[in-house]
Image (cartoon, rainbow, N blue to C red; front, side, top):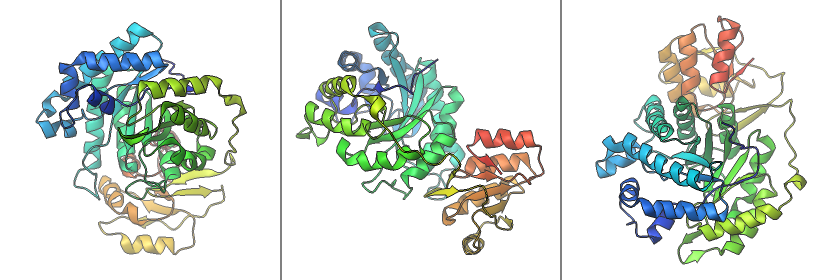
Length: 408
Protein backbone atom coordinates (compact mmCIF):
# COMPACT_ATOMS: atom_id res chain seq x y z
CA UNK A 1 0.00 0.00 0.00
CA UNK A 2 1.21 3.51 -0.86
CA UNK A 3 1.27 5.34 2.45
CA UNK A 4 2.36 8.64 0.86
CA UNK A 5 4.86 9.46 3.58
CA UNK A 6 6.80 11.72 1.23
CA UNK A 7 3.87 14.14 1.10
CA UNK A 8 2.96 16.71 3.80
CA UNK A 9 0.66 14.82 6.13
CA UNK A 10 -1.31 15.83 9.20
CA UNK A 11 -1.37 13.23 11.96
CA UNK A 12 -3.54 13.16 15.07
CA UNK A 13 -2.97 14.47 18.59
CA UNK A 14 -2.80 12.98 22.06
CA UNK A 15 -4.78 9.91 23.00
CA UNK A 16 -4.16 9.34 26.71
CA UNK A 17 -4.55 12.92 27.95
CA UNK A 18 -7.71 13.45 25.90
CA UNK A 19 -9.24 10.20 27.16
CA UNK A 20 -8.45 11.25 30.72
CA UNK A 21 -10.63 14.30 30.12
CA UNK A 22 -13.33 11.86 29.08
CA UNK A 23 -13.15 9.76 32.23
CA UNK A 24 -10.24 7.35 31.86
CA UNK A 25 -8.59 6.95 35.31
CA UNK A 26 -4.94 8.01 35.31
CA UNK A 27 -3.52 4.73 36.58
CA UNK A 28 -5.87 2.33 34.81
CA UNK A 29 -4.80 -0.01 32.05
CA UNK A 30 -5.56 2.11 28.95
CA UNK A 31 -6.12 -0.88 26.65
CA UNK A 32 -8.59 -2.51 29.00
CA UNK A 33 -10.45 0.74 29.77
CA UNK A 34 -10.78 1.65 26.08
CA UNK A 35 -12.16 -1.76 25.14
CA UNK A 36 -14.68 -1.43 27.96
CA UNK A 37 -15.53 2.12 26.77
CA UNK A 38 -15.03 1.96 22.98
CA UNK A 39 -17.25 4.96 22.25
CA UNK A 40 -14.78 7.25 24.04
CA UNK A 41 -12.02 6.31 21.59
CA UNK A 42 -14.35 6.45 18.60
CA UNK A 43 -15.49 9.96 19.53
CA UNK A 44 -11.90 11.14 19.96
CA UNK A 45 -10.77 9.66 16.66
CA UNK A 46 -13.80 11.13 14.91
CA UNK A 47 -12.93 14.55 16.33
CA UNK A 48 -9.36 14.29 15.01
CA UNK A 49 -10.63 13.16 11.61
CA UNK A 50 -13.03 16.10 11.43
CA UNK A 51 -10.11 18.36 12.40
CA UNK A 52 -8.24 17.16 9.31
CA UNK A 53 -6.02 14.28 10.50
CA UNK A 54 -4.99 11.97 7.68
CA UNK A 55 -3.21 9.48 9.92
CA UNK A 56 -4.61 8.12 13.19
CA UNK A 57 -2.51 6.19 15.70
CA UNK A 58 -3.78 3.19 17.63
CA UNK A 59 -3.97 3.56 21.46
CA UNK A 60 -1.48 0.73 22.01
CA UNK A 61 1.56 2.47 23.50
CA UNK A 62 1.04 0.63 26.79
CA UNK A 63 -0.29 -2.59 25.27
CA UNK A 64 2.95 -4.55 24.91
CA UNK A 65 3.48 -7.63 27.07
CA UNK A 66 5.93 -5.88 29.40
CA UNK A 67 3.61 -2.96 30.20
CA UNK A 68 0.52 -5.16 30.50
CA UNK A 69 2.30 -7.22 33.15
CA UNK A 70 1.74 -4.28 35.54
CA UNK A 71 -1.95 -5.20 35.53
CA UNK A 72 -1.33 -8.96 35.18
CA UNK A 73 -2.80 -8.78 31.68
CA UNK A 74 0.23 -9.83 29.63
CA UNK A 75 -1.67 -12.85 28.26
CA UNK A 76 -4.12 -10.40 26.65
CA UNK A 77 -1.43 -8.68 24.54
CA UNK A 78 -2.38 -10.13 21.14
CA UNK A 79 -6.12 -9.84 21.78
CA UNK A 80 -5.93 -6.24 23.02
CA UNK A 81 -3.73 -5.03 20.18
CA UNK A 82 -5.83 -6.73 17.54
CA UNK A 83 -9.09 -5.35 18.94
CA UNK A 84 -7.75 -1.83 19.45
CA UNK A 85 -6.40 -1.80 15.91
CA UNK A 86 -9.73 -3.03 14.55
CA UNK A 87 -11.60 -0.36 16.50
CA UNK A 88 -9.34 2.37 15.14
CA UNK A 89 -9.43 1.05 11.57
CA UNK A 90 -13.22 0.75 11.53
CA UNK A 91 -13.68 4.32 12.75
CA UNK A 92 -11.26 5.69 10.14
CA UNK A 93 -12.61 3.64 7.23
CA UNK A 94 -16.18 4.74 7.97
CA UNK A 95 -15.06 8.37 7.89
CA UNK A 96 -12.71 8.14 4.88
CA UNK A 97 -11.16 4.95 3.46
CA UNK A 98 -8.01 6.83 2.48
CA UNK A 99 -7.09 7.77 6.08
CA UNK A 100 -4.03 5.85 7.29
CA UNK A 101 -3.90 3.95 10.55
CA UNK A 102 -0.54 3.61 12.31
CA UNK A 103 -0.10 0.81 14.81
CA UNK A 104 1.82 2.14 17.82
CA UNK A 105 4.59 0.34 19.68
CA UNK A 106 6.44 2.19 22.41
CA UNK A 107 9.46 1.93 24.71
CA UNK A 108 9.63 -1.07 26.99
CA UNK A 109 10.42 -0.60 30.67
CA UNK A 110 13.37 -2.95 30.31
CA UNK A 111 16.84 -2.37 28.89
CA UNK A 112 18.87 -4.66 26.68
CA UNK A 113 22.33 -5.84 27.63
CA UNK A 114 24.85 -4.51 28.56
CA UNK A 115 22.90 -1.78 30.39
CA UNK A 116 20.09 -4.11 31.39
CA UNK A 117 19.55 -7.78 31.91
CA UNK A 118 17.39 -8.50 28.86
CA UNK A 119 18.97 -10.09 25.75
CA UNK A 120 18.58 -7.82 22.73
CA UNK A 121 16.82 -10.56 20.76
CA UNK A 122 14.14 -10.75 23.46
CA UNK A 123 13.30 -7.09 22.82
CA UNK A 124 13.05 -7.80 19.10
CA UNK A 125 10.67 -10.66 19.84
CA UNK A 126 8.43 -8.56 22.09
CA UNK A 127 8.06 -5.90 19.40
CA UNK A 128 7.49 -8.52 16.69
CA UNK A 129 4.62 -10.10 18.64
CA UNK A 130 2.87 -6.77 19.10
CA UNK A 131 3.45 -5.73 15.49
CA UNK A 132 1.94 -8.95 14.16
CA UNK A 133 -1.14 -8.48 16.35
CA UNK A 134 -1.54 -4.91 15.09
CA UNK A 135 -1.23 -6.12 11.52
CA UNK A 136 -3.99 -8.66 12.17
CA UNK A 137 -6.09 -5.73 13.33
CA UNK A 138 -5.71 -4.07 9.93
CA UNK A 139 -3.22 -1.21 10.43
CA UNK A 140 -1.54 0.27 7.34
CA UNK A 141 1.86 0.90 8.91
CA UNK A 142 3.62 0.90 12.27
CA UNK A 143 5.21 3.61 14.37
CA UNK A 144 7.81 3.02 17.08
CA UNK A 145 6.81 6.08 19.06
CA UNK A 146 8.68 8.16 21.65
CA UNK A 147 11.60 5.74 21.77
CA UNK A 148 14.27 6.63 24.32
CA UNK A 149 17.38 4.75 23.10
CA UNK A 150 18.95 3.64 19.83
CA UNK A 151 18.91 0.07 21.13
CA UNK A 152 15.13 0.18 21.61
CA UNK A 153 14.67 1.87 18.24
CA UNK A 154 16.66 -0.82 16.47
CA UNK A 155 14.83 -3.61 18.30
CA UNK A 156 11.51 -2.04 17.36
CA UNK A 157 12.41 -1.72 13.67
CA UNK A 158 13.77 -5.27 13.49
CA UNK A 159 10.74 -6.63 15.30
CA UNK A 160 8.12 -4.56 13.49
CA UNK A 161 9.40 -5.27 10.02
CA UNK A 162 8.58 -8.95 10.58
CA UNK A 163 4.99 -7.83 10.05
CA UNK A 164 5.90 -6.68 6.53
CA UNK A 165 4.61 -3.13 7.05
CA UNK A 166 6.42 0.23 6.83
CA UNK A 167 7.89 1.30 10.17
CA UNK A 168 8.27 4.92 11.30
CA UNK A 169 10.36 5.92 14.32
CA UNK A 170 10.14 8.89 16.66
CA UNK A 171 12.44 9.63 19.58
CA UNK A 172 11.88 11.46 22.83
CA UNK A 173 15.12 13.34 23.50
CA UNK A 174 16.45 15.62 26.21
CA UNK A 175 16.74 19.38 25.74
CA UNK A 176 20.30 18.99 24.40
CA UNK A 177 19.07 16.66 21.66
CA UNK A 178 20.47 13.46 23.13
CA UNK A 179 18.61 10.38 24.30
CA UNK A 180 18.60 9.43 27.97
CA UNK A 181 21.55 7.12 27.22
CA UNK A 182 23.59 9.92 25.62
CA UNK A 183 22.99 9.07 21.96
CA UNK A 184 23.27 11.90 19.46
CA UNK A 185 20.12 12.58 17.41
CA UNK A 186 22.00 12.53 14.10
CA UNK A 187 23.41 9.13 15.02
CA UNK A 188 19.90 7.84 15.72
CA UNK A 189 18.67 9.17 12.38
CA UNK A 190 21.49 7.49 10.45
CA UNK A 191 20.97 4.15 12.21
CA UNK A 192 17.19 4.15 11.76
CA UNK A 193 17.08 5.27 8.13
CA UNK A 194 19.83 2.83 7.14
CA UNK A 195 17.88 0.06 8.86
CA UNK A 196 14.86 0.86 6.72
CA UNK A 197 12.69 3.26 8.73
CA UNK A 198 10.04 4.84 6.51
CA UNK A 199 10.20 8.12 8.43
CA UNK A 200 12.06 9.48 11.45
CA UNK A 201 11.58 12.28 13.92
CA UNK A 202 10.61 13.51 17.35
CA UNK A 203 7.63 12.93 19.60
CA UNK A 204 6.63 14.43 22.94
CA UNK A 205 9.89 16.15 24.09
CA UNK A 206 8.61 19.74 24.45
CA UNK A 207 6.51 22.43 22.81
CA UNK A 208 7.17 23.02 19.07
CA UNK A 209 9.54 26.00 19.25
CA UNK A 210 11.88 24.05 21.54
CA UNK A 211 12.41 21.48 18.76
CA UNK A 212 13.53 23.87 16.00
CA UNK A 213 17.24 23.27 16.58
CA UNK A 214 16.79 19.49 16.62
CA UNK A 215 15.10 19.46 13.21
CA UNK A 216 17.75 21.82 11.83
CA UNK A 217 20.39 19.41 13.11
CA UNK A 218 19.05 16.26 11.44
CA UNK A 219 17.44 17.66 8.27
CA UNK A 220 20.71 17.85 6.24
CA UNK A 221 21.24 14.10 6.72
CA UNK A 222 17.67 12.90 6.32
CA UNK A 223 16.86 10.77 3.28
CA UNK A 224 13.39 9.94 4.60
CA UNK A 225 10.47 12.13 5.73
CA UNK A 226 10.80 13.88 9.09
CA UNK A 227 8.04 13.55 11.70
CA UNK A 228 7.39 15.99 14.54
CA UNK A 229 4.76 15.43 17.22
CA UNK A 230 5.43 17.99 20.00
CA UNK A 231 3.62 18.47 23.27
CA UNK A 232 0.98 21.16 23.53
CA UNK A 233 1.82 21.76 27.16
CA UNK A 234 3.04 20.45 30.49
CA UNK A 235 -0.38 19.87 32.02
CA UNK A 236 -3.99 20.89 31.50
CA UNK A 237 -3.35 24.26 33.13
CA UNK A 238 -0.23 25.09 31.07
CA UNK A 239 -1.15 24.53 27.45
CA UNK A 240 -0.49 26.43 24.26
CA UNK A 241 -3.63 27.71 22.63
CA UNK A 242 -4.49 26.09 19.29
CA UNK A 243 -3.42 29.31 17.55
CA UNK A 244 -0.10 29.45 19.42
CA UNK A 245 0.71 25.83 18.67
CA UNK A 246 -0.11 26.19 14.99
CA UNK A 247 2.15 29.23 14.67
CA UNK A 248 5.02 27.42 16.39
CA UNK A 249 4.48 24.39 14.15
CA UNK A 250 5.04 26.63 11.13
CA UNK A 251 8.68 26.92 12.19
CA UNK A 252 9.06 23.13 12.12
CA UNK A 253 7.66 22.92 8.59
CA UNK A 254 10.05 25.63 7.44
CA UNK A 255 12.95 23.54 8.77
CA UNK A 256 12.01 20.40 6.86
CA UNK A 257 9.34 18.49 8.79
CA UNK A 258 6.55 17.09 6.59
CA UNK A 259 4.65 14.71 8.89
CA UNK A 260 3.24 16.62 11.84
CA UNK A 261 0.84 16.06 14.69
CA UNK A 262 0.83 16.41 18.43
CA UNK A 263 1.57 14.48 21.59
CA UNK A 264 0.56 15.16 25.20
CA UNK A 265 -2.33 17.63 25.68
CA UNK A 266 -2.80 18.14 21.92
CA UNK A 267 -6.54 18.35 21.34
CA UNK A 268 -8.61 18.14 18.14
CA UNK A 269 -8.81 21.95 18.29
CA UNK A 270 -5.00 22.14 18.15
CA UNK A 271 -4.94 19.75 15.17
CA UNK A 272 -7.59 21.76 13.33
CA UNK A 273 -5.51 24.96 13.61
CA UNK A 274 -2.33 23.14 12.57
CA UNK A 275 -4.17 21.75 9.54
CA UNK A 276 -5.38 25.22 8.57
CA UNK A 277 -1.80 26.51 8.82
CA UNK A 278 -0.52 23.61 6.68
CA UNK A 279 -3.03 24.33 3.93
CA UNK A 280 -1.68 27.88 3.69
CA UNK A 281 2.00 26.90 4.03
CA UNK A 282 4.23 26.98 0.92
CA UNK A 283 6.15 23.70 1.17
CA UNK A 284 7.88 24.41 -2.15
CA UNK A 285 9.69 27.35 -0.55
CA UNK A 286 11.45 25.12 2.00
CA UNK A 287 15.10 24.49 1.16
CA UNK A 288 17.34 22.34 3.31
CA UNK A 289 21.04 22.27 2.50
CA UNK A 290 21.87 18.56 2.30
CA UNK A 291 25.13 16.85 3.23
CA UNK A 292 27.44 16.11 0.29
CA UNK A 293 26.19 12.91 -1.38
CA UNK A 294 29.77 11.60 -1.48
CA UNK A 295 30.05 11.61 2.31
CA UNK A 296 29.70 8.18 3.89
CA UNK A 297 27.37 8.56 6.87
CA UNK A 298 28.10 6.09 9.66
CA UNK A 299 27.10 5.94 13.31
CA UNK A 300 27.89 4.26 16.57
CA UNK A 301 25.61 3.92 19.56
CA UNK A 302 26.21 7.51 20.64
CA UNK A 303 27.73 9.56 17.83
CA UNK A 304 27.76 9.98 14.03
CA UNK A 305 30.82 9.70 11.77
CA UNK A 306 31.39 11.37 8.41
CA UNK A 307 33.91 9.64 6.14
CA UNK A 308 35.19 9.86 2.60
CA UNK A 309 36.11 6.87 0.45
CA UNK A 310 39.78 7.03 1.46
CA UNK A 311 39.37 6.04 5.10
CA UNK A 312 42.00 3.94 6.87
CA UNK A 313 41.23 0.78 8.82
CA UNK A 314 43.01 -0.68 11.82
CA UNK A 315 44.50 -4.14 11.82
CA UNK A 316 41.86 -6.73 12.78
CA UNK A 317 41.34 -7.39 16.47
CA UNK A 318 39.74 -10.48 17.93
CA UNK A 319 36.84 -10.58 20.37
CA UNK A 320 36.73 -11.64 24.00
CA UNK A 321 34.59 -10.91 27.03
CA UNK A 322 36.56 -7.86 28.18
CA UNK A 323 37.81 -5.82 25.22
CA UNK A 324 38.40 -2.49 26.97
CA UNK A 325 42.17 -2.43 26.45
CA UNK A 326 41.94 -3.46 22.80
CA UNK A 327 39.27 -0.86 22.04
CA UNK A 328 41.32 1.90 23.66
CA UNK A 329 44.31 0.92 21.52
CA UNK A 330 42.13 1.11 18.40
CA UNK A 331 41.11 4.67 19.21
CA UNK A 332 44.76 5.62 19.70
CA UNK A 333 45.85 3.98 16.43
CA UNK A 334 45.19 7.04 14.26
CA UNK A 335 43.05 5.00 11.83
CA UNK A 336 39.53 6.02 10.84
CA UNK A 337 37.70 2.70 11.19
CA UNK A 338 38.08 -0.19 13.66
CA UNK A 339 38.31 -3.64 12.07
CA UNK A 340 36.64 -6.27 14.25
CA UNK A 341 37.22 -9.94 13.42
CA UNK A 342 34.07 -11.99 14.03
CA UNK A 343 34.77 -15.73 13.88
CA UNK A 344 31.82 -17.10 15.85
CA UNK A 345 28.38 -16.13 17.11
CA UNK A 346 29.92 -15.83 20.57
CA UNK A 347 32.38 -13.26 19.15
CA UNK A 348 29.42 -11.22 17.92
CA UNK A 349 27.85 -11.34 21.38
CA UNK A 350 31.11 -10.38 23.12
CA UNK A 351 31.64 -7.39 20.86
CA UNK A 352 28.04 -6.23 21.35
CA UNK A 353 28.64 -6.12 25.11
CA UNK A 354 31.79 -4.02 24.64
CA UNK A 355 30.87 -1.84 21.66
CA UNK A 356 29.63 1.10 23.75
CA UNK A 357 33.23 1.76 24.81
CA UNK A 358 34.42 2.29 21.22
CA UNK A 359 34.14 5.78 19.73
CA UNK A 360 34.95 5.18 16.07
CA UNK A 361 33.22 3.47 13.13
CA UNK A 362 33.28 -0.31 12.96
CA UNK A 363 34.00 -2.76 10.13
CA UNK A 364 33.19 -6.44 10.61
CA UNK A 365 35.56 -8.96 9.02
CA UNK A 366 34.18 -12.51 9.02
CA UNK A 367 34.29 -15.80 7.17
CA UNK A 368 31.08 -17.04 8.82
CA UNK A 369 27.71 -15.93 7.47
CA UNK A 370 25.98 -16.82 10.74
CA UNK A 371 28.52 -14.95 12.88
CA UNK A 372 28.52 -11.90 10.61
CA UNK A 373 24.73 -11.68 10.66
CA UNK A 374 24.70 -11.88 14.45
CA UNK A 375 27.31 -9.12 14.69
CA UNK A 376 25.27 -6.85 12.44
CA UNK A 377 22.07 -7.62 14.33
CA UNK A 378 23.55 -7.01 17.77
CA UNK A 379 25.60 -3.88 17.00
CA UNK A 380 23.67 -0.73 17.96
CA UNK A 381 25.09 1.39 15.21
CA UNK A 382 25.66 1.44 11.46
CA UNK A 383 28.66 -0.75 10.53
CA UNK A 384 30.81 -1.53 7.54
CA UNK A 385 31.00 -5.09 6.22
CA UNK A 386 34.62 -5.73 5.23
CA UNK A 387 34.78 -6.81 1.58
CA UNK A 388 37.85 -8.92 2.46
CA UNK A 389 35.56 -11.33 4.32
CA UNK A 390 35.77 -14.81 2.83
CA UNK A 391 32.11 -14.95 1.89
CA UNK A 392 30.34 -14.65 -1.45
CA UNK A 393 29.75 -11.04 -2.47
CA UNK A 394 26.01 -11.65 -2.75
CA UNK A 395 25.93 -12.77 0.89
CA UNK A 396 27.81 -9.67 2.04
CA UNK A 397 25.47 -7.40 0.10
CA UNK A 398 22.35 -9.17 1.38
CA UNK A 399 23.42 -8.98 5.02
CA UNK A 400 24.52 -5.37 4.67
CA UNK A 401 21.18 -4.38 3.15
CA UNK A 402 19.24 -6.22 5.84
CA UNK A 403 21.00 -4.50 8.72
CA UNK A 404 21.74 -1.03 7.37
CA UNK A 405 25.43 -1.69 6.85
CA UNK A 406 27.82 -0.68 4.05
CA UNK A 407 30.11 -3.08 2.17
CA UNK A 408 33.63 -1.65 1.78
